[in-house]
Length: 68
Image (cartoon, rainbow, N blue to C red; front, side, top):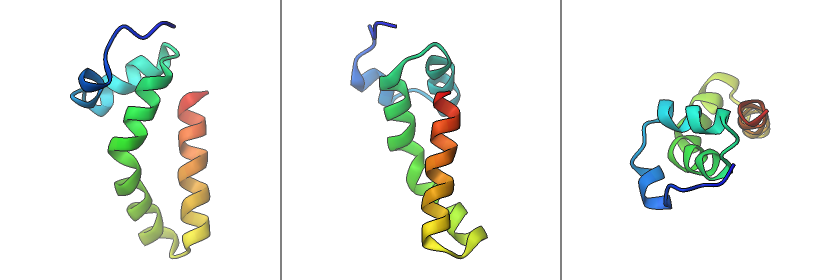
């Protein structure tokens, strides 16, 4: 998919809007989704798992699943 939306526009999108674009194969939208949510998701994973490595792996697996 060709990205016709600039990076600035992607930064203004909600996670739901970004997920819709990711579903269409938009890698830039995945990057923007990661940039906007990864820190919070990591904090949740760390709080639940109480293990830094497991939290990092879970976050990675989550974004791989979103991309697929």
